[in-house]
Length: 136
Image (cartoon, rainbow, N blue to C red; front, top):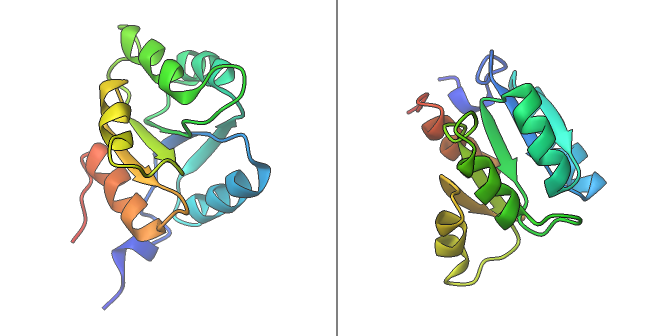
């Protein structure tokens, strides 16, 4: 039986804004998502994420929380405070894995939270859930 999480059509029609300042992390995740049909744009800091979210209106934002210029916590607060962007799901993607970091991300307005290093299967399930496209 074919694994639906490996399908090239999994992310078809879905535009993801990846907010990640580390080139290696961004490149690795971008390639893995594109292999599954997602269209991926990248912002390198929270300020750029604000502008790109407003301009591109992506279907989902993967937000690193430790960013230069404007951190992911504040960028998420501002995205969620804008009525034109508040409905865009934001998934916190961070190396912060302490007990209260998940709650901190949710309090900032993130719709879900996942940790680095990325477990792609877990991340894809969370992304699809936020997009209303759950798979078995």
